[in-house]
View 1: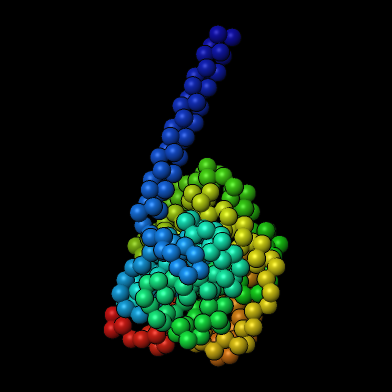
View 2: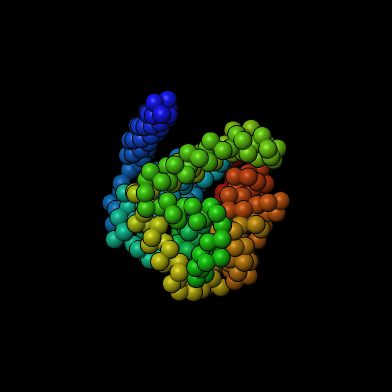
Length: 325
Protein backbone atom coordinates (compact mmCIF):
# COMPACT_ATOMS: atom_id res chain seq x y z
CA UNK A 1 0.00 0.00 0.00
CA UNK A 2 2.89 2.32 0.88
CA UNK A 3 4.54 1.70 -2.50
CA UNK A 4 1.25 2.37 -4.26
CA UNK A 5 0.88 5.68 -2.43
CA UNK A 6 4.45 6.62 -3.31
CA UNK A 7 3.81 5.88 -7.00
CA UNK A 8 0.60 7.90 -6.94
CA UNK A 9 2.45 10.81 -5.37
CA UNK A 10 5.25 10.51 -7.93
CA UNK A 11 2.83 10.49 -10.88
CA UNK A 12 0.92 13.44 -9.43
CA UNK A 13 4.17 15.39 -8.96
CA UNK A 14 5.32 14.70 -12.53
CA UNK A 15 1.90 15.59 -13.93
CA UNK A 16 1.81 18.80 -11.91
CA UNK A 17 5.30 19.79 -13.07
CA UNK A 18 4.38 19.10 -16.69
CA UNK A 19 1.20 21.17 -16.35
CA UNK A 20 3.12 24.05 -14.78
CA UNK A 21 5.76 23.91 -17.55
CA UNK A 22 3.04 23.97 -20.20
CA UNK A 23 1.36 26.95 -18.57
CA UNK A 24 4.64 28.86 -18.39
CA UNK A 25 5.41 28.09 -22.04
CA UNK A 26 1.95 29.27 -23.06
CA UNK A 27 2.27 32.56 -21.16
CA UNK A 28 5.73 33.23 -22.60
CA UNK A 29 4.60 32.56 -26.15
CA UNK A 30 1.47 34.66 -25.72
CA UNK A 31 3.49 37.64 -24.48
CA UNK A 32 5.95 37.20 -27.34
CA UNK A 33 3.10 37.09 -29.87
CA UNK A 34 1.46 40.21 -28.42
CA UNK A 35 4.77 42.10 -28.46
CA UNK A 36 5.47 41.03 -32.06
CA UNK A 37 2.02 42.20 -33.17
CA UNK A 38 2.40 45.61 -31.50
CA UNK A 39 5.68 46.46 -33.22
CA UNK A 40 4.86 44.92 -36.60
CA UNK A 41 2.18 47.37 -37.76
CA UNK A 42 0.86 50.91 -37.62
CA UNK A 43 -2.64 52.03 -36.68
CA UNK A 44 -3.54 54.72 -39.22
CA UNK A 45 -6.46 57.12 -38.96
CA UNK A 46 -8.43 57.19 -42.22
CA UNK A 47 -11.63 58.85 -43.37
CA UNK A 48 -13.45 55.60 -42.53
CA UNK A 49 -11.86 55.16 -39.10
CA UNK A 50 -8.67 53.56 -37.76
CA UNK A 51 -7.11 50.82 -39.91
CA UNK A 52 -4.14 48.71 -38.86
CA UNK A 53 -1.69 47.88 -41.61
CA UNK A 54 1.86 46.89 -42.44
CA UNK A 55 3.68 47.50 -45.71
CA UNK A 56 6.53 45.47 -47.20
CA UNK A 57 8.29 45.44 -50.55
CA UNK A 58 8.48 48.05 -53.28
CA UNK A 59 6.80 48.42 -56.66
CA UNK A 60 3.13 48.36 -57.74
CA UNK A 61 0.80 47.99 -54.76
CA UNK A 62 -1.20 44.89 -53.85
CA UNK A 63 -3.57 45.12 -50.88
CA UNK A 64 -4.14 41.79 -49.09
CA UNK A 65 -7.56 41.25 -47.51
CA UNK A 66 -6.86 38.41 -45.09
CA UNK A 67 -9.04 35.44 -44.27
CA UNK A 68 -11.14 34.79 -41.20
CA UNK A 69 -9.16 34.25 -38.00
CA UNK A 70 -6.29 36.35 -39.34
CA UNK A 71 -5.01 39.91 -39.30
CA UNK A 72 -2.34 42.00 -40.97
CA UNK A 73 0.19 39.33 -39.97
CA UNK A 74 -1.65 36.75 -42.09
CA UNK A 75 -1.63 39.24 -44.97
CA UNK A 76 2.15 39.56 -44.63
CA UNK A 77 2.59 35.77 -44.60
CA UNK A 78 0.43 35.32 -47.69
CA UNK A 79 1.82 38.36 -49.48
CA UNK A 80 5.52 37.59 -49.02
CA UNK A 81 5.94 35.94 -52.47
CA UNK A 82 4.50 39.09 -54.06
CA UNK A 83 6.87 41.35 -52.13
CA UNK A 84 9.78 39.12 -53.16
CA UNK A 85 8.63 39.43 -56.79
CA UNK A 86 8.74 43.23 -56.77
CA UNK A 87 5.37 44.40 -55.46
CA UNK A 88 4.46 46.59 -52.51
CA UNK A 89 2.24 44.52 -50.22
CA UNK A 90 -0.24 46.43 -48.07
CA UNK A 91 -1.43 44.02 -45.40
CA UNK A 92 -4.44 45.29 -43.44
CA UNK A 93 -6.28 44.01 -40.41
CA UNK A 94 -9.93 43.92 -41.44
CA UNK A 95 -12.48 45.35 -39.04
CA UNK A 96 -12.67 43.56 -35.71
CA UNK A 97 -9.25 41.99 -36.14
CA UNK A 98 -6.31 42.98 -33.94
CA UNK A 99 -6.29 46.82 -33.64
CA UNK A 100 -8.81 47.73 -36.35
CA UNK A 101 -12.08 48.42 -34.50
CA UNK A 102 -15.36 47.00 -35.70
CA UNK A 103 -16.87 50.46 -36.14
CA UNK A 104 -14.45 51.18 -39.01
CA UNK A 105 -16.74 49.04 -41.14
CA UNK A 106 -18.52 45.86 -40.04
CA UNK A 107 -20.10 45.05 -43.43
CA UNK A 108 -18.16 43.80 -46.47
CA UNK A 109 -19.20 47.00 -48.28
CA UNK A 110 -17.79 49.18 -45.49
CA UNK A 111 -14.62 47.10 -45.40
CA UNK A 112 -14.18 47.67 -49.12
CA UNK A 113 -14.43 51.42 -48.51
CA UNK A 114 -11.91 51.08 -45.67
CA UNK A 115 -9.52 49.42 -48.15
CA UNK A 116 -9.80 52.51 -50.36
CA UNK A 117 -9.37 54.79 -47.33
CA UNK A 118 -6.11 53.15 -46.21
CA UNK A 119 -4.73 53.53 -49.74
CA UNK A 120 -5.64 57.24 -49.55
CA UNK A 121 -3.88 57.55 -46.21
CA UNK A 122 -0.77 55.87 -47.61
CA UNK A 123 -0.80 58.03 -50.74
CA UNK A 124 -1.36 55.06 -53.06
CA UNK A 125 -3.52 55.92 -56.06
CA UNK A 126 -3.98 52.46 -57.59
CA UNK A 127 -3.63 48.92 -56.28
CA UNK A 128 -4.47 45.34 -57.04
CA UNK A 129 -6.27 43.43 -54.31
CA UNK A 130 -5.93 39.83 -53.19
CA UNK A 131 -8.80 38.43 -51.15
CA UNK A 132 -8.17 35.25 -49.17
CA UNK A 133 -10.98 33.07 -47.80
CA UNK A 134 -13.26 35.28 -45.68
CA UNK A 135 -11.54 38.36 -47.11
CA UNK A 136 -13.07 37.66 -50.51
CA UNK A 137 -16.31 39.65 -50.18
CA UNK A 138 -14.56 42.92 -49.30
CA UNK A 139 -12.00 42.34 -52.08
CA UNK A 140 -14.70 41.82 -54.73
CA UNK A 141 -16.61 44.83 -53.43
CA UNK A 142 -13.48 46.97 -53.54
CA UNK A 143 -13.19 46.16 -57.26
CA UNK A 144 -16.90 46.90 -57.68
CA UNK A 145 -17.16 50.09 -55.59
CA UNK A 146 -13.77 51.58 -56.47
CA UNK A 147 -13.08 50.48 -60.04
CA UNK A 148 -10.91 53.54 -60.73
CA UNK A 149 -8.56 52.44 -57.92
CA UNK A 150 -8.51 48.68 -58.51
CA UNK A 151 -6.09 47.44 -61.17
CA UNK A 152 -6.61 43.69 -60.67
CA UNK A 153 -8.48 41.26 -58.42
CA UNK A 154 -7.30 37.87 -57.15
CA UNK A 155 -9.86 35.71 -55.35
CA UNK A 156 -8.01 32.92 -53.53
CA UNK A 157 -10.06 30.19 -51.82
CA UNK A 158 -12.67 32.86 -51.22
CA UNK A 159 -16.30 33.15 -50.28
CA UNK A 160 -18.26 35.20 -52.82
CA UNK A 161 -21.89 34.42 -52.03
CA UNK A 162 -23.97 33.61 -48.95
CA UNK A 163 -22.35 30.71 -47.22
CA UNK A 164 -23.05 28.85 -44.01
CA UNK A 165 -20.33 26.53 -42.79
CA UNK A 166 -22.68 23.55 -42.38
CA UNK A 167 -20.83 21.59 -45.06
CA UNK A 168 -17.48 22.57 -43.60
CA UNK A 169 -18.43 21.45 -40.10
CA UNK A 170 -17.65 17.88 -41.10
CA UNK A 171 -14.00 18.94 -41.42
CA UNK A 172 -12.01 18.07 -38.27
CA UNK A 173 -9.87 21.18 -38.79
CA UNK A 174 -12.90 23.47 -38.94
CA UNK A 175 -14.51 21.84 -35.89
CA UNK A 176 -11.29 22.11 -33.90
CA UNK A 177 -10.79 25.79 -34.76
CA UNK A 178 -14.39 26.72 -33.97
CA UNK A 179 -14.16 24.88 -30.65
CA UNK A 180 -10.91 26.65 -29.79
CA UNK A 181 -11.74 30.14 -31.03
CA UNK A 182 -12.95 31.46 -27.67
CA UNK A 183 -9.81 30.50 -25.78
CA UNK A 184 -6.23 31.64 -26.33
CA UNK A 185 -4.96 28.58 -24.49
CA UNK A 186 -7.11 26.21 -26.56
CA UNK A 187 -5.97 27.68 -29.89
CA UNK A 188 -2.36 27.70 -28.66
CA UNK A 189 -2.65 24.02 -27.73
CA UNK A 190 -4.18 23.21 -31.13
CA UNK A 191 -1.48 25.06 -33.06
CA UNK A 192 1.27 23.54 -30.90
CA UNK A 193 -0.11 20.10 -31.68
CA UNK A 194 -0.02 20.86 -35.40
CA UNK A 195 3.61 21.96 -35.17
CA UNK A 196 4.57 18.87 -33.18
CA UNK A 197 2.70 16.56 -35.55
CA UNK A 198 4.22 18.02 -38.72
CA UNK A 199 7.56 16.12 -38.59
CA UNK A 200 5.69 12.87 -37.94
CA UNK A 201 3.33 13.54 -40.83
CA UNK A 202 6.34 14.28 -43.01
CA UNK A 203 7.93 10.98 -42.06
CA UNK A 204 4.71 9.16 -42.98
CA UNK A 205 3.93 11.17 -46.12
CA UNK A 206 6.77 12.09 -48.52
CA UNK A 207 4.54 14.72 -50.18
CA UNK A 208 4.14 16.64 -46.90
CA UNK A 209 7.88 16.34 -46.33
CA UNK A 210 8.62 17.73 -49.78
CA UNK A 211 5.86 20.32 -50.02
CA UNK A 212 6.01 21.88 -46.57
CA UNK A 213 8.91 20.77 -44.42
CA UNK A 214 11.83 20.76 -46.87
CA UNK A 215 10.91 23.95 -48.76
CA UNK A 216 11.91 27.17 -46.93
CA UNK A 217 9.32 29.40 -48.67
CA UNK A 218 6.45 27.02 -47.98
CA UNK A 219 7.59 26.45 -44.41
CA UNK A 220 7.82 30.21 -43.81
CA UNK A 221 4.30 30.77 -45.12
CA UNK A 222 2.95 27.78 -43.16
CA UNK A 223 4.45 29.07 -39.91
CA UNK A 224 3.25 32.60 -40.65
CA UNK A 225 -0.33 31.50 -41.25
CA UNK A 226 -0.28 29.42 -38.04
CA UNK A 227 1.04 32.39 -36.04
CA UNK A 228 -1.71 34.59 -37.47
CA UNK A 229 -4.33 32.66 -35.50
CA UNK A 230 -2.84 33.45 -32.09
CA UNK A 231 -3.79 35.09 -29.79
CA UNK A 232 -7.35 34.41 -30.87
CA UNK A 233 -8.80 36.84 -28.32
CA UNK A 234 -7.52 39.75 -30.44
CA UNK A 235 -9.27 38.34 -33.53
CA UNK A 236 -12.48 36.92 -32.07
CA UNK A 237 -14.66 39.98 -32.77
CA UNK A 238 -13.63 39.95 -36.43
CA UNK A 239 -14.16 36.22 -36.78
CA UNK A 240 -17.64 36.32 -35.27
CA UNK A 241 -18.52 39.30 -37.46
CA UNK A 242 -17.26 37.41 -40.54
CA UNK A 243 -19.38 34.37 -39.75
CA UNK A 244 -22.44 36.59 -39.22
CA UNK A 245 -21.93 38.63 -42.39
CA UNK A 246 -21.10 35.69 -44.64
CA UNK A 247 -24.13 33.79 -43.40
CA UNK A 248 -26.44 36.72 -44.24
CA UNK A 249 -24.57 38.22 -47.18
CA UNK A 250 -26.55 39.98 -49.86
CA UNK A 251 -25.71 38.88 -53.41
CA UNK A 252 -22.71 40.75 -54.78
CA UNK A 253 -23.39 41.93 -58.36
CA UNK A 254 -20.29 40.20 -59.67
CA UNK A 255 -21.47 40.64 -63.24
CA UNK A 256 -20.71 44.35 -62.81
CA UNK A 257 -17.06 43.82 -61.86
CA UNK A 258 -14.97 45.16 -64.75
CA UNK A 259 -11.58 44.54 -63.13
CA UNK A 260 -9.30 41.80 -64.55
CA UNK A 261 -9.88 38.86 -62.21
CA UNK A 262 -8.02 35.66 -61.36
CA UNK A 263 -9.83 33.01 -59.30
CA UNK A 264 -7.69 30.39 -57.55
CA UNK A 265 -9.09 27.48 -55.54
CA UNK A 266 -8.28 23.97 -54.32
CA UNK A 267 -10.53 21.25 -55.69
CA UNK A 268 -10.55 19.45 -52.33
CA UNK A 269 -11.26 22.48 -50.13
CA UNK A 270 -13.54 21.28 -47.32
CA UNK A 271 -13.85 24.71 -45.66
CA UNK A 272 -14.89 26.83 -48.66
CA UNK A 273 -16.17 24.47 -51.40
CA UNK A 274 -14.82 24.93 -54.92
CA UNK A 275 -18.35 25.77 -56.12
CA UNK A 276 -17.75 29.22 -54.63
CA UNK A 277 -14.85 29.75 -57.07
CA UNK A 278 -16.88 28.38 -59.96
CA UNK A 279 -19.69 30.79 -59.11
CA UNK A 280 -17.26 33.72 -58.94
CA UNK A 281 -15.62 32.92 -62.27
CA UNK A 282 -18.96 32.32 -63.98
CA UNK A 283 -20.33 35.72 -62.94
CA UNK A 284 -17.34 38.08 -63.30
CA UNK A 285 -16.93 38.87 -67.00
CA UNK A 286 -13.65 37.55 -68.37
CA UNK A 287 -12.52 36.03 -65.05
CA UNK A 288 -9.85 33.34 -65.27
CA UNK A 289 -10.46 30.27 -63.09
CA UNK A 290 -7.59 27.98 -62.07
CA UNK A 291 -8.30 25.07 -59.74
CA UNK A 292 -5.71 22.76 -58.26
CA UNK A 293 -6.08 19.03 -57.71
CA UNK A 294 -3.71 16.50 -56.15
CA UNK A 295 -5.16 16.95 -52.66
CA UNK A 296 -5.34 20.76 -52.85
CA UNK A 297 -7.39 21.92 -49.84
CA UNK A 298 -7.95 25.30 -48.17
CA UNK A 299 -4.20 25.75 -47.75
CA UNK A 300 -3.42 24.95 -51.39
CA UNK A 301 -1.49 28.20 -51.75
CA UNK A 302 1.10 26.63 -49.41
CA UNK A 303 0.99 22.97 -50.47
CA UNK A 304 0.96 23.93 -54.18
CA UNK A 305 3.20 26.95 -53.73
CA UNK A 306 5.23 26.42 -56.92
CA UNK A 307 2.08 26.23 -59.02
CA UNK A 308 0.04 28.99 -57.39
CA UNK A 309 2.40 31.92 -56.93
CA UNK A 310 3.97 32.02 -60.40
CA UNK A 311 0.42 32.18 -61.79
CA UNK A 312 -0.53 35.01 -59.42
CA UNK A 313 2.66 36.97 -60.10
CA UNK A 314 2.34 36.61 -63.88
CA UNK A 315 -1.28 37.81 -63.70
CA UNK A 316 -0.34 40.84 -61.62
CA UNK A 317 2.53 41.77 -63.92
CA UNK A 318 0.18 41.71 -66.89
CA UNK A 319 -2.41 43.96 -65.28
CA UNK A 320 -0.60 46.03 -62.65
CA UNK A 321 2.85 46.47 -64.15
CA UNK A 322 6.05 44.69 -64.99
CA UNK A 323 8.25 45.05 -61.93
CA UNK A 324 11.27 43.62 -63.66
CA UNK A 325 11.94 41.42 -60.62
